[in-house]
Image (cartoon, rainbow, N blue to C red):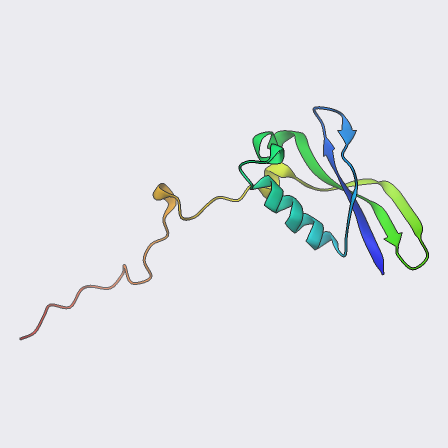
Length: 105
C-alpha cells in the first residue's frame, strides 16, 4: 500500500514538524482539522502559523519513498470550524415557522 506523507509547516519557527503517514489526503486533512479545533492544541492557539503540507509517498511493500517538493494542502485558519450551537449561533427550531394551534375543548 502506498501511504501519503504529510507534515505541518510552522512559519513562526520556519521549519517542518515530524512527518506523518495517512492512506489519503482526506484522512490527513481530517486529522489536522481535528487538531486545529482542539482548544488545548498549539495548532488552535496559533492557527495563523501552521499549514498542512504534502511531501510524497511511502510504499510499504518496497520500503521506497517517493518525495516531491512540499505542497500546501490547507492552512490551520482554513480548518477552523464555527460551532453552530454556541449561544449566539443556535440553529432555529425546525418547527419555528409553524403557528401554534389553539386548544379546542
